[in-house]
Length: 125
Image (cartoon, rainbow, N blue to C red):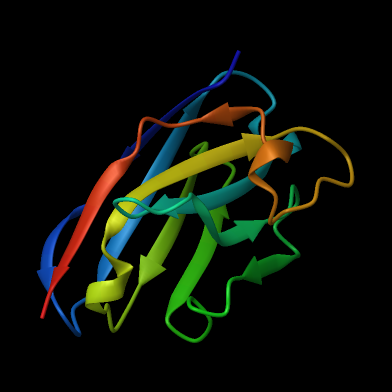
């Protein structure tokens, strides 16, 4: 069983930066692909960014490209989402997710096995 705990959310102004962290407990962390998703009020959960098991492959939603960076530190069982130039439309609850399936489709929330509880990011204009 893998448990995920997000941290780093908060209230910021447009143009600011935040770094979200997701700490994982449990064995074989390095075997999991990791993703970040978000859900704004009255909207469906959407893909933000993901990183492959070994860290060689990263993938971003168009809304995150050139502003967000996903990374992982397998030695700390933690992965991160660096967010720059935040916009009000980035306001959402952000969730981290882990999936152990080989060939996992990184953008598909249904492919992930474990989820964190979410952390709120609010960007004021």
